[in-house]
Length: 287
Image (cartoon, rainbow, N blue to C red; front, side):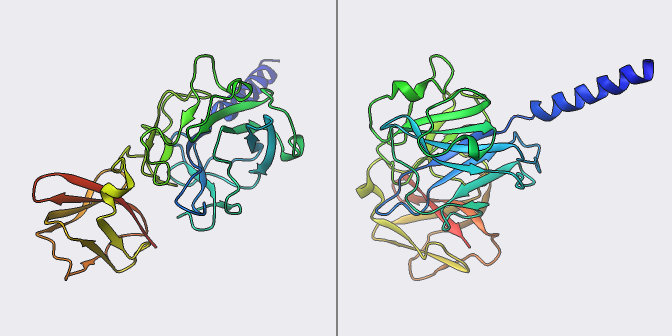
C-alpha cells in the first residue's frame, strides 16, 4: 500500500509540474509600414527551454464581433533552447510556424493561448475562458473592447501598439521577458521588435521623419552595413538584443561600409551617436 501511495503521489506531482510550466504570450507585432509582412506572435516558457507545446492552441479573436477568426494547433512544436517560439509571416527572422501576411487584425482584437485543440475554435467561436492560459487584448488607437477584455484579469488594460506614435516600427512586448504573469498586460511596453530573442525595450524616435534622415542599408544585411545620412556622426554602436555592444565604429564615414561577417544571424540595435551627442536607435536584421 505504501508503494502504491508513493507511486500515485509521484504521478500527481509529475502531472502538476507539467501543467505548472506556464507558457506566456511574450510579444506581438501586428502593424508594419505598408503591407503587413512581418507580423508575429512570440511565446516564451520563462527560460526553461525545449518545452513541448503539445496540447496548446493559439486563437485569434476579432474585435468586430468578439469571435475567433483563426486558430493554430501547436502539437509537435516546442520552444527553443532559450525558451522562445515564434508564429509569424515568412519574413520574420527565426519564425517557427508560418502564417500568411496580413492575417493579424490591427485592433481592437485579441490573441489568446489555450490548453485545447484548434477544433474547439472554428471560425466564429465566441470568446471563452475555459482552459485559457494567457491572452493579450490590443489595438492601434482604437476604443477598448469590453467583450474581449474579459480574457484579461480584472483591471488589466487593452494595449495600444501606437502608444508612442510608432506602431509601424514597434511591437508590444513584455519587459523583462515573462514579466507580469498570465493574463496580465501591465508589464508590456511598445518597443523595437525582437522576435525569438530577449526583449530589450529599445524605442525608436517617435515620428517617422525624425529617423528618415538616417537610413541603414541593406536590410536585412549579411556581410556589411551602410548608413546613409547627411548628419555628422560621431560613432555607431551595434548591440545584440541583450544590450551587449558587439561592434563599434568611431568617426564613421558613409564611404566605408561596416563589415559584419563576424556577427551571427539575428536582430541587432544600431545606435547612431551624432556630433551633438544625440542618439538614434534603429533595428537591423542579419540573415
